[in-house]
Length: 137
Image (cartoon, rainbow, N blue to C red; front, side):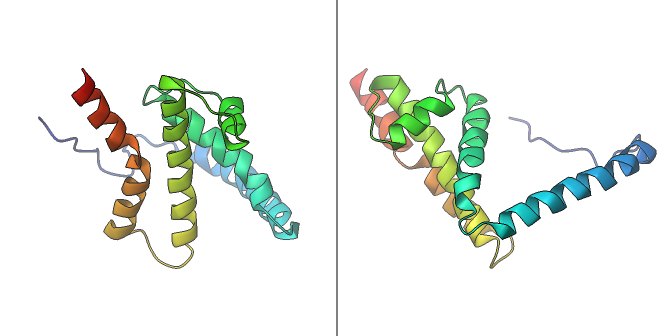
């Protein structure tokens, strides 16, 4: 196995003029978003669907086959069996890991302990699934 060695940063062919034109509008959008969150009593109400959507989209890279609606239905108490239920659990673990990181990063920098904690959340119940597959078949 060959390790991945990323290219040095910043890339040599980076077009700074293109990037600089986009910084102002991006900063303004982030400021509006931050202001919106600050004015809300419970910002997690707005962030929860976005976090779920991010978890679903990111988990698709891993091959999961569940939608945002199915994850929300599961959280509302509807059970899914088989592979669908396992995919939903992976997505929920991903979201839990994101929330753990968001909370932890307000008090500490990113470190190896936090990465390990996030990995443990991601793998919660997945190890059991792998063992069940290996022993049953």
